[in-house]
Image (tube, rainbow, N blue to C red; front, side, top):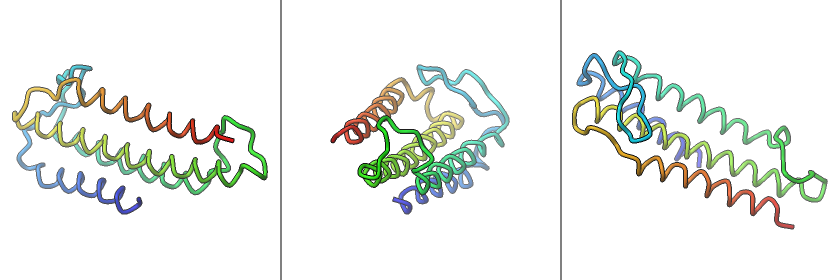
Length: 147
């Protein structure tokens, strides 16, 4: 999973490097719920997205090595600790990949829209993202509450 996460973050950062020269001076920096750009900024602001992606990716991944400091829905005992800690670690690693993919999508869409290749990315990606998070958390909750 670390290879996937690293690849996603690295490829989106490389895409920024490759596309940076072709970006206009002003690019979209925020999108409304419909995927239409509603705030704009200097093209150097594109570097915030890979930086945040890296910070969150490394942070979530690192946190997965310390599952004992997390909060849990069930009381942690000596009997259920290995299972609960393994589930939480896996959730954080998968969540790290999902967050990195979301930021990669945001980088791609920002660059494509800035280069006038599209007007907006619509509402479908937002529904997929929300549904993905709910599904991921739902699977974790079911697994963690099983006896």
